Length: 292
Image (cartoon, rainbow, N blue to C red; front, side):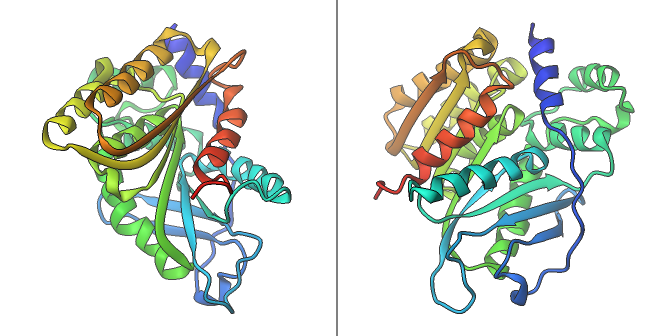
């Protein structure tokens, strides 16, 4: 059951191809497509940027940024949902930055996200997934979340801040393994983002490792200033919902000062079908126009 559910989530993430552009300040009036190389893991990442309708290089307005993982499938979705919500002014203006490793094919893409989003290395799992996905085992290496977090903090975010009119308020959203990484950010460096969209997270990774990481964080910290939206599809089953519920309950039990949480289990939705619902709801909960 675990393998079947995860395979479905893997094939959800379809691949599209973007054209490289060289960023400059003159380009920031319209959406950009940029390549940034990590100083930490040596990989290149494609950043696809969607700007608020009112964005202009000629005024002094600055905007919050939402970083969305798995950009090859999430960029168009978030961009479209934001444009529809904007029609009724239901969300605040926000710059959306979709992040994707710059892989040349499906195998490279899967191996890259598998490595980047997992907090710990499990050689046995690497071998298993390499065989299942027909990927050379030397390309499958879990446990790169720490390096990717450094890449995000030290390379990708500064690049966006340099080339776009940001205001220092950052958010992150991810689904499946991307949700796992967003949760990892929450317990490793919560101040990096003010909002977290953690959707159908793979918290089952390494025997519910996320629960242990959160408990370790609680031993050293009394506060966690963040707004978190958790979600999953009701049809995902206990493999996904059980670890998610356990982490939510643990966060509540520790009573972190400054932590706000919303959660939603979407009835009738699977690990795949829930993506559109959780993307829309994450935008409305985290950036609702009626929020202070």
